Amino acid sequence: MTIYLYIICSFVAGFIIAWVIQMINLMKLKKEYKSTQGLLESEKLKKETSQKENTFLIQSADATLLVTKEKLRKAEELVRIMDNDILLLQKSNEENESFFAKAEPVLHEMKLKLIEANNNVARLKKQLGEK
Image (cartoon, rainbow, N blue to C red; front, side, top):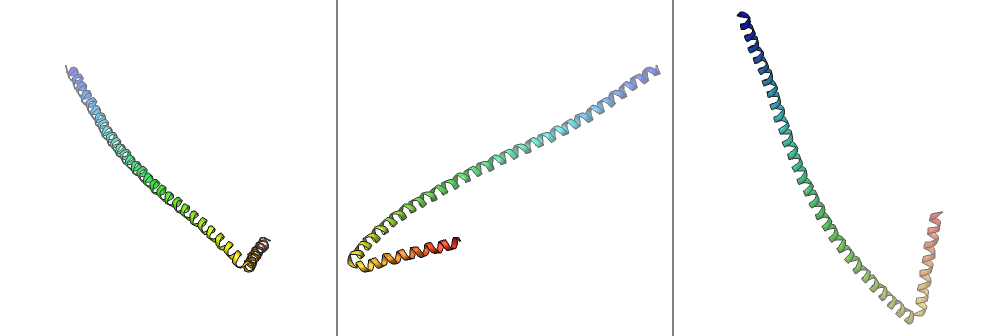
């Protein structure tokens, strides 16, 4: 009979030990599950933050692009105005030049020779500078 008692005690002790081992494993699994859940939540928050940052950067880039396009449009408009002004100045210079040529032909001829001489001097200086 004592043998039955030992068998029953061994069985109960084995059952208790197995139950304790299973509880320890179950606790470890729960701890790992909570850790994994925390990591998953952390990654979700990082993803949301990254998406918000990307949205902000895209909006910022769009705004910068619009500002740049507006500046380009204004610059092109300014260039057109400057081109028109240059054409008007050239026309005025030509009119003045023709008036001056008619009024004082000798002075006009001397002016043209002086301009040609200045151009020759500039060419010679450039040639000497290149050598």
